[in-house]
Length: 292
Image (cartoon, rainbow, N blue to C red; front, side, top):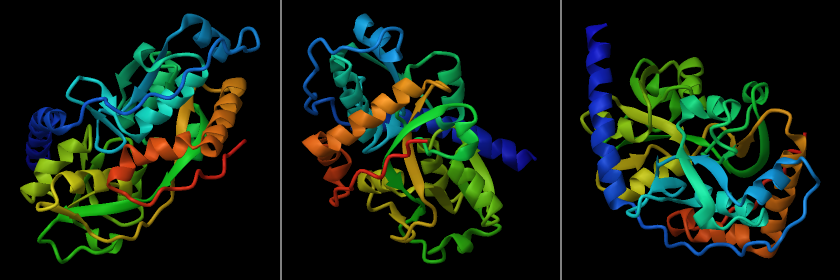
């Protein structure tokens, strides 16, 4: 028990230090903004009409995920998730400078939606049946897969079966945390954010970090001499969706239409290539939308 609390204290301290370091190395918000729809029309009393009329939107995203959602030097988040959020806002007639970005971590996403703290969440948010009982999802707009990141000199972990009985860091409340324990028998060392796992891995307090491959690839791209992916292979499918208030079917279906439109007009491709695509060179195809 004492060892657990020591680990927890170290994770909290590491989180604070790394938040500063990641902000320092993050880029500024210089990606081009999508064209904003002029006077779009929506059915009365829909979420789209309310947001468009207000001229502003609150979007939850992560602030510590390189390539997808990371706070830049100017204090604004950048990344693929951020660009997807901008695309949706633009279709509502809302420019990027009228978006309020709220940091959301894995453990608070459902609550933020239910409490109305955000209008939607784009934050490496895996769609699954359990979460669908609490919130709605538009998308998926990307399909990732769970992977393992280890220290550069690690030669003993190359697949998920290798972490049985070993300390592995992941985020509280995340799908990867549950999978690595329930399916592969790892000993979970929980953290509030994935960046808080980096120092424990570097110091060998844990032997691996697990989450989606694209998130880990972002960390590797920042410190290629320190970390590596244990393997290029993923061992789950993680469809990323846009989290919305439960039973807001009209908003969900409208966002799905916008995602498909962005794929056709090239804006989805541009959003990828200016963010995650700077490291992950293969541009993904938009996954088949789940119109449940």
